[in-house]
Length: 65
Image 1 (spheres, rainbow, N blue to C red):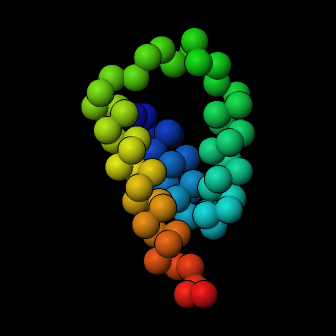
Image 2 (cartoon, rainbow, N blue to C red):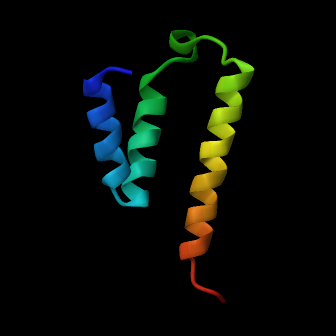
Image 3 (tube, rainbow, N blue to C red):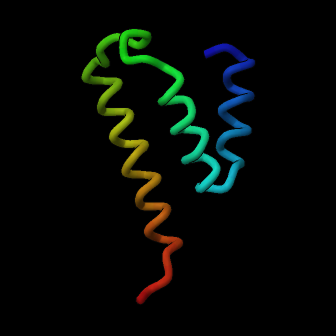
């Protein structure tokens, strides 16, 4: 990853989760599936791990009902 991309990622991580989700959706709508190609098993595993980490973080911040 380039240093410029790393700066963008670091700034993204500082955003509130709601804004992160909005940026994620905007990027997802910008890229066509053909632009990315198929994901490898390692990429899918890493994405799943990141997704579960975000969900765990969100769950830990949620108030009990």
